[in-house]
Length: 181
Image (cartoon, rainbow, N blue to C red; front, top):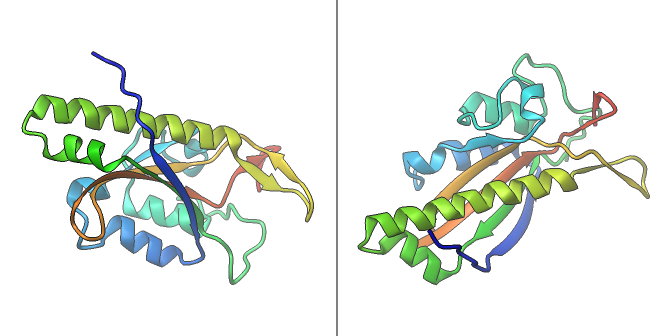
Protein backbone atom coordinates (compact mmCIF):
# COMPACT_ATOMS: atom_id res chain seq x y z
CA UNK A 1 0.00 0.00 0.00
CA UNK A 2 1.42 3.30 -1.11
CA UNK A 3 0.68 6.77 0.09
CA UNK A 4 -1.31 9.01 -2.23
CA UNK A 5 -0.59 12.71 -2.19
CA UNK A 6 -3.07 14.54 -4.35
CA UNK A 7 -3.86 18.21 -4.57
CA UNK A 8 -7.61 18.82 -4.34
CA UNK A 9 -9.75 21.87 -4.91
CA UNK A 10 -11.96 23.03 -2.04
CA UNK A 11 -14.94 25.37 -2.41
CA UNK A 12 -17.28 26.63 0.28
CA UNK A 13 -20.94 27.25 -0.43
CA UNK A 14 -23.88 28.13 1.79
CA UNK A 15 -27.62 28.18 1.28
CA UNK A 16 -30.72 29.82 2.69
CA UNK A 17 -32.95 27.15 1.12
CA UNK A 18 -33.05 23.95 3.20
CA UNK A 19 -35.66 22.32 0.96
CA UNK A 20 -33.52 22.78 -2.16
CA UNK A 21 -30.47 21.30 -0.49
CA UNK A 22 -32.49 18.39 0.90
CA UNK A 23 -33.85 17.66 -2.59
CA UNK A 24 -30.41 17.83 -4.21
CA UNK A 25 -28.69 15.46 -1.76
CA UNK A 26 -31.59 13.12 -1.01
CA UNK A 27 -33.81 12.92 -4.11
CA UNK A 28 -32.28 14.52 -7.22
CA UNK A 29 -32.76 12.15 -10.19
CA UNK A 30 -29.21 12.69 -11.49
CA UNK A 31 -27.73 11.07 -8.36
CA UNK A 32 -27.22 7.34 -8.03
CA UNK A 33 -28.48 5.54 -4.94
CA UNK A 34 -24.89 5.29 -3.69
CA UNK A 35 -24.41 9.05 -4.11
CA UNK A 36 -27.49 9.73 -1.96
CA UNK A 37 -26.13 7.61 0.89
CA UNK A 38 -24.07 9.93 2.99
CA UNK A 39 -22.45 9.22 6.34
CA UNK A 40 -22.57 11.34 9.49
CA UNK A 41 -19.41 12.72 11.03
CA UNK A 42 -18.81 14.79 14.16
CA UNK A 43 -19.23 14.94 17.90
CA UNK A 44 -22.44 16.96 17.60
CA UNK A 45 -24.22 14.10 15.83
CA UNK A 46 -25.15 12.59 19.20
CA UNK A 47 -26.87 15.84 20.18
CA UNK A 48 -29.18 15.31 17.21
CA UNK A 49 -29.91 11.68 18.03
CA UNK A 50 -27.58 9.76 15.70
CA UNK A 51 -23.96 8.61 15.79
CA UNK A 52 -20.93 9.59 13.79
CA UNK A 53 -20.49 6.92 11.10
CA UNK A 54 -24.24 6.26 10.74
CA UNK A 55 -25.91 6.48 7.35
CA UNK A 56 -27.66 9.81 6.66
CA UNK A 57 -31.45 9.33 6.57
CA UNK A 58 -33.66 11.90 4.78
CA UNK A 59 -35.57 12.92 7.94
CA UNK A 60 -32.30 13.42 9.86
CA UNK A 61 -30.84 15.55 7.08
CA UNK A 62 -34.00 17.69 6.97
CA UNK A 63 -33.79 18.24 10.75
CA UNK A 64 -30.15 19.34 10.53
CA UNK A 65 -30.82 21.82 7.72
CA UNK A 66 -33.95 23.16 9.45
CA UNK A 67 -32.11 23.54 12.77
CA UNK A 68 -34.04 20.94 14.80
CA UNK A 69 -33.19 17.69 16.57
CA UNK A 70 -35.17 14.53 15.69
CA UNK A 71 -37.30 15.26 18.78
CA UNK A 72 -38.11 18.62 17.08
CA UNK A 73 -36.42 20.78 19.69
CA UNK A 74 -34.86 23.87 18.16
CA UNK A 75 -31.09 24.20 17.77
CA UNK A 76 -31.34 27.78 16.55
CA UNK A 77 -31.63 30.77 18.85
CA UNK A 78 -32.95 33.16 16.20
CA UNK A 79 -35.14 32.12 13.27
CA UNK A 80 -34.63 34.77 10.64
CA UNK A 81 -36.35 34.49 7.25
CA UNK A 82 -32.98 34.56 5.46
CA UNK A 83 -31.22 32.18 7.88
CA UNK A 84 -28.38 30.15 6.36
CA UNK A 85 -29.44 26.52 6.65
CA UNK A 86 -25.92 25.20 6.27
CA UNK A 87 -22.55 25.11 4.64
CA UNK A 88 -21.21 22.80 1.95
CA UNK A 89 -17.47 22.25 1.69
CA UNK A 90 -16.95 20.73 -1.77
CA UNK A 91 -13.72 18.73 -2.13
CA UNK A 92 -12.89 17.90 -5.76
CA UNK A 93 -10.24 15.51 -7.03
CA UNK A 94 -8.26 16.49 -10.14
CA UNK A 95 -9.56 15.08 -13.43
CA UNK A 96 -6.70 12.55 -13.68
CA UNK A 97 -7.56 11.13 -10.25
CA UNK A 98 -11.27 11.10 -11.08
CA UNK A 99 -10.67 9.16 -14.29
CA UNK A 100 -8.38 6.66 -12.52
CA UNK A 101 -10.82 6.23 -9.61
CA UNK A 102 -13.89 5.79 -11.78
CA UNK A 103 -12.77 4.48 -15.19
CA UNK A 104 -9.59 2.46 -14.66
CA UNK A 105 -9.96 -1.11 -15.88
CA UNK A 106 -8.34 -2.41 -12.66
CA UNK A 107 -11.17 -2.72 -10.09
CA UNK A 108 -8.73 -3.10 -7.19
CA UNK A 109 -6.91 0.08 -8.23
CA UNK A 110 -10.22 1.97 -8.49
CA UNK A 111 -11.20 0.79 -5.01
CA UNK A 112 -7.87 1.88 -3.48
CA UNK A 113 -8.16 5.37 -4.96
CA UNK A 114 -11.82 5.76 -3.96
CA UNK A 115 -11.08 4.60 -0.41
CA UNK A 116 -8.18 7.05 -0.12
CA UNK A 117 -10.49 9.84 -1.31
CA UNK A 118 -13.20 8.89 1.24
CA UNK A 119 -10.57 8.90 3.99
CA UNK A 120 -9.45 12.37 2.89
CA UNK A 121 -13.05 13.58 3.24
CA UNK A 122 -13.19 12.34 6.84
CA UNK A 123 -9.92 14.17 7.53
CA UNK A 124 -11.35 17.34 5.96
CA UNK A 125 -14.54 16.98 8.05
CA UNK A 126 -12.39 16.65 11.17
CA UNK A 127 -10.54 19.86 10.30
CA UNK A 128 -13.83 21.69 9.67
CA UNK A 129 -15.13 20.53 13.03
CA UNK A 130 -12.02 21.76 14.84
CA UNK A 131 -12.36 25.15 13.12
CA UNK A 132 -16.08 25.58 13.86
CA UNK A 133 -17.03 28.90 15.44
CA UNK A 134 -20.10 30.82 16.43
CA UNK A 135 -20.61 34.54 16.20
CA UNK A 136 -20.79 35.97 19.71
CA UNK A 137 -21.21 39.61 18.68
CA UNK A 138 -21.04 41.67 15.54
CA UNK A 139 -17.27 41.81 15.79
CA UNK A 140 -16.16 38.53 17.31
CA UNK A 141 -16.36 34.78 16.87
CA UNK A 142 -15.87 32.09 19.48
CA UNK A 143 -14.41 28.64 18.73
CA UNK A 144 -16.84 25.79 19.49
CA UNK A 145 -15.02 22.85 17.87
CA UNK A 146 -18.18 20.91 17.05
CA UNK A 147 -20.58 20.46 14.16
CA UNK A 148 -22.56 17.61 12.62
CA UNK A 149 -21.50 16.92 9.04
CA UNK A 150 -23.12 14.78 6.36
CA UNK A 151 -20.47 13.43 3.98
CA UNK A 152 -21.63 12.61 0.43
CA UNK A 153 -19.39 11.20 -2.32
CA UNK A 154 -20.39 11.94 -5.92
CA UNK A 155 -18.93 10.41 -9.07
CA UNK A 156 -20.06 12.68 -11.90
CA UNK A 157 -20.12 16.35 -12.79
CA UNK A 158 -23.33 18.17 -13.70
CA UNK A 159 -22.49 17.24 -17.30
CA UNK A 160 -22.18 13.51 -16.57
CA UNK A 161 -18.42 13.18 -17.02
CA UNK A 162 -16.25 11.41 -14.41
CA UNK A 163 -15.70 13.80 -11.51
CA UNK A 164 -14.88 12.39 -8.08
CA UNK A 165 -15.91 14.93 -5.47
CA UNK A 166 -17.30 15.02 -1.97
CA UNK A 167 -19.71 17.29 -0.13
CA UNK A 168 -19.25 17.99 3.57
CA UNK A 169 -22.62 19.47 4.49
CA UNK A 170 -22.91 20.98 7.95
CA UNK A 171 -25.99 22.54 9.46
CA UNK A 172 -25.70 26.11 10.64
CA UNK A 173 -25.76 24.99 14.28
CA UNK A 174 -23.11 24.28 16.89
CA UNK A 175 -22.90 23.74 20.67
CA UNK A 176 -21.24 26.29 22.93
CA UNK A 177 -21.26 26.28 26.73
CA UNK A 178 -23.74 23.38 26.80
CA UNK A 179 -26.33 25.11 24.65
CA UNK A 180 -27.08 25.51 20.98
CA UNK A 181 -25.52 28.51 19.30
